[in-house]
Structures are given as C-alpha cells and as structure tokens.
Amino acid sequence: MDVLADVLAAMRVGRPVAALTEAHAPWGLRFDHVMGAAFHVVLQGTCWLTPIDGSGFAPVELGPGDVVLLGIGTPHALVSAGGVPLGDFTPTRDSPDAPFGRLVLPGSGVRSTVVCGAYRLARSRPHPLLRDLPEVVHLSALPGRHPGLRAMVELLGLELRTSPPGAAAVTPSLVDALLVYLLRAWLQDSADTSSWSAAMADPAAARVLAAVHAEPARAWTVEQLAGVAGLSRAAFARRFVALVGEPPLTYVTRWRMTIAARLLRDTDKTLAQVGSVVGYGSAFAFAKAFRREYATTPGDYRAAATGHRGSSD
Image (tube, rainbow, N blue to C red; front, side):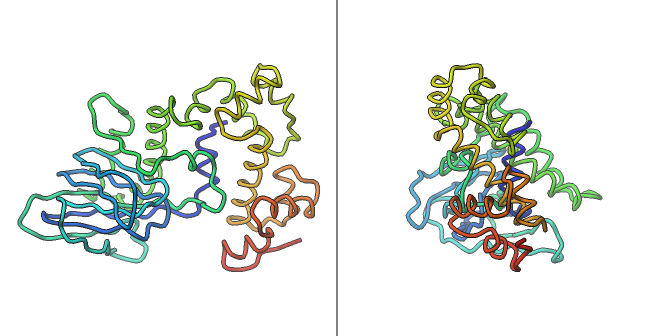
C-alpha cells in the first residue's frame, strides 16, 4: 500500500488551479484568498516570497528552479523587490475549460516567469501529513538535490512555455504529480524533525501505516498492530505516539473517517455502504462515529460538500 498516494487521494477535494505568470520588474502580486495549499514554481528570473496580513514567516528569495509550497494557504505575496505595490492575482483563461490561466504584467524591467497555483485539500479534519507541513516549504534548485522534482519542474515549464499539441491534456497531470514530488522532497528533508516524516521513514511505523491503509475496515487491535510492527504492545504504542502524534487506534479511526468523508463527497454510496467500507456494521453505528469525529451528521456533511443532499439510508 502506497500510504502517501492513499492520503493524497483521500484529502483532495478538487483539481488544482494554476496560471503561468510573466512579470516585468517592478511588480508585486498578492495572494490573500488561497483556497488550499498554494504553490509557486520559478521558471525564469528571481523574486521574493513575502508575508502579508500578519503571516509569520520570513521573506524567502527565490531563483530559477525553486519551488515553494504553503501547505496551510497562508496569505502571502510575490514581489520583484521589497516595497513595490501589490496587485491582485487575476489570471485570465482562453476558455472556461482551459486547464491553466495566464497573467502578464508588462514593463521594462527584468522578466520573471512563475507558475502560481493551489491544490484543493480537505481542511475540516486534516490528516497528520498536512498537520505537520510547515507554513512554508522551500525547495531550492541545488545541484543534485531532488532530481525527480527538478525533472518535473523542467517538464512543466517546457509544456507551459511552448504549448505543444496536447499540452492541455498533459499539464493538469503534471501539476497533480508535482504535489507528490513536493511532498516526497519535504519528507526526505524533514525526516529528523517532522513526526509524520519520521513515521514514514521508520520501518516499524511504516509497516503499520501500510497495513491500516490496506485494510481500513479490519477490526484492528493494538496487539495486532504491534505484531505487524514486530514490537511488544507497550513498545509499539510508545513508538507510534512519538512518531505519528496520536495513539494507534486513534489513527485508525481518523483514517476510517477520512475515507468515509471522501466517499460521501465523491460517490452516491448510501450511509450503510460507506460504513461497511470503513468497518461499521450498520448505518447507525457509522453515523454515530462520524458525528463524533466531524461534529456533523454524514448526511449534512454530504449536503455541504456537494451542494445537495445525498442518500441517507
């Protein structure tokens, strides 16, 4: 079981949005209404990522090949230099169905080309992977670092700059894949500091997470999970809490409800069917557990997520 892919599939609530920005200095763009996890990829030139509206991070200088991910959608700005006025980020699209927008800021100064966008991720009960993301993840284009991410950036930049035949079909998939490469790089760089990164790197914890994700409906016990980890019950429980940040069965319940929320958003399964997928023998038992975790009923959650009330029987 690929735990990272599983988490992303469950947490995404829509396709990413993105635009290619070509800006000539001096320029500044404000991003204060980010719907999801914002990202920026610098293809050409330089700029600064700066905080706005009380954001607490320090300004970050960005150069060609640099990538930043703002995992919690922190308000921010991109500027050519400090002190420049900020304008709204208002890209245009060739058609309503166009996968990418474009924004051109004319001028006589040095040109910078940046892909700006956001991933729509569920926020009502974030997975620990999202919880552990820092305010700003900065992955600089250092030689030899994260070759997969570097190759993805180059390919995305080529598609957007040249718009070859089929680019409209390819670029959304590339942006989707970019998030995986971003998180891989962050997990690799933060394995010693982030609890979720450490859990993914720990063989015992990784085996347990893979088992839970492979069989979410199984009536797991701490003893069974300790057996998967190859540890005693007490040693496993301590290790799991230290790495993941919550007890094993708490994580099992969290993951079950995360899957349930995705099924309520994205399918027409009845409550009984959703409950069965995540290990509950009746719609009543499932609804009770869901309400305890999300503070709302499954039917109301579905209605809010989809704009209409789905089946509740």
